[in-house]
Length: 115
Image (cartoon, rainbow, N blue to C red):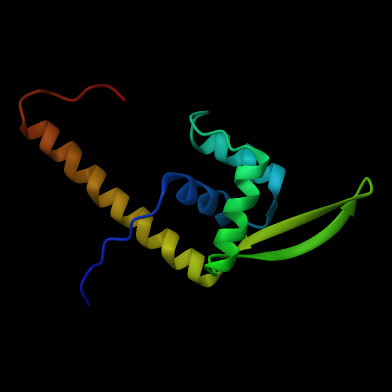
């Protein structure tokens, strides 16, 4: 089977990565995304829930459960098998591209900039 490049937006990649550890509610996802991105990516609540709706419609995530906390409904999301497969493919592709970039930089004679 040919290796097809899956183009996944960074925010999608990081949200799926946050959910790879297990079911999490919206605020937990926002915290995880911020941490995983080193503070570069901060999702607003409205942006997150629009993304969660889209990812649910695409079958990449699903609602795991809902519970009432302090009179408010807290919805937990989980990665689906389809989402896990998409994240695995995207992570492997990024890893291959990063390895190639580092190899080319080493061979360029320009040296490696510290990351």
